[in-house]
Amino acid sequence: MPKDPATLAVRLTDDSELRRLNRDFSAEDAVTDVLSFQGDGSHLGDLAISWPAVLRQAAEHGHAPDTELALLSIHGLLHLLGWDHGTARERREMSRITMAALAESELVPAPGRL
Image 1 (tube, rainbow, N blue to C red):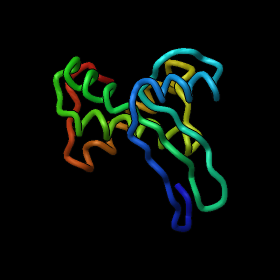
Image 2 (cartoon, rainbow, N blue to C red):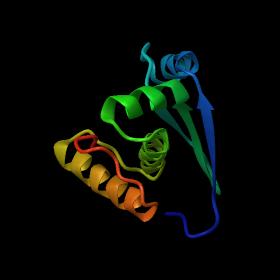
Image 3 (cartoon, rainbow, N blue to C red):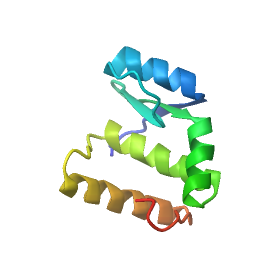
């Protein structure tokens, strides 16, 4: 985490914008639920989150949309802080940190979500 105060921008949008952003910045022509864009200085970066994906995934997993939104926000923030999930070990650690952050907010994702 940054030592000094920092900013983070979060944009809730739709699937079509997430697909466009994913295509334009990641060369992947597919819808995704959250994208992270690195910032500089005291601005950690920007998150773009698909609200329709939040609603779909919350219903699919059986927990509230606010829990899914928090989960995706934490996931995106972890990427901005340098975390990745390319290996099983990294996925486990990101999941552990995500669960700890959700617990601090008294949010509990459905079993099997992470």
